[in-house]
Image: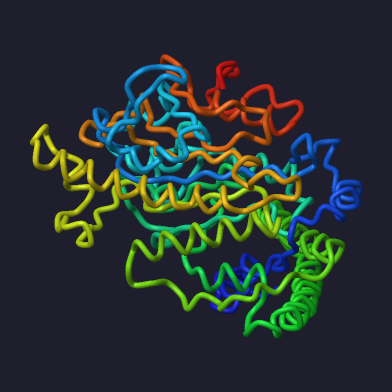
Length: 457
């Protein structure tokens, strides 16, 4: 096997990360029972009581929110949305605003600075990060826990998206690796799942390259090429087994595991049949305008759910600490700079406007999911659990208590939205345990720093 430090070895690793399964099929009622019978994982199914797919997504926005503008007034079903979440008024009966969820694993403690890195990678892991630029250690993220339970039911166990840069190495925040800053999903404690920022590549991965009418043939051709490459690298790697030490043997075993995972996904896609070919243009690439980029990535997630390409997805709108300006709404200063407002009213107003802008983008996504009819006659939003939030609460002080969290969707009727609930300072990971219950995950006794379920959800 070629040296993995060589350019050829690096290229091969990048190819293996990217090959994956890339076919998609709509959620068709006539196929549900057959798919369920052939894709059950330990008796667990990510479906509603009506047999429709149950989707879960996690959408992350950066730099916290202005608390006074974010939180509603009132309680329970008798609440009035604050200025930031006012765009969600039309979705009022389809969302829950959840207060009092904390991520104390993101607190500084003895590690000092680095709240933005901790906010990002603690958000879905709920563990204390190892402060290092190279020796990274986090935890398996909740989306990947779900993907391991339900991933064989769809062509993609999970779909990781981003509207940000992709950085895997170097120092990005007070001694923390960039891997912490630019990733939400972690398949192991040391392996982030790199998100894709290019909507064209996301679309082609799901449906194939080329124009409408060409994509299925292109996908099948690519799949045959994938099998050929996988056979090559497996044979190449096996020849090394007798000539390496124990440390390298462990690395090689991880390599085999990754290749076998890809093979399993290819086999699973073949079992699920040929992909659909959407009668729409392939996205051109990453738009220059950030708002357009955000909306097209939301569209890719909605399309993935609509076609049952995956039931688990994450979208990193921007990393915590992001300092982009928002000229489209008249804000020339950087978001992160403004978030340290030191109680200056003009700066607070600008941050609140940015928070409002993000809420408007999220509302468009919810409206799209709500407009898509699912196989059981309900909407895709009804048959979903969508978490919208961030790992920083008050960006001015870098706090990680009272995280801004919205939970949208009804989980197919398993949840009762239309409420504002105060959890009075419980771990945010308790929400994940509760979501796992609604999904039918068995045997998950804890996650991260969780202390129990949220009976109020």
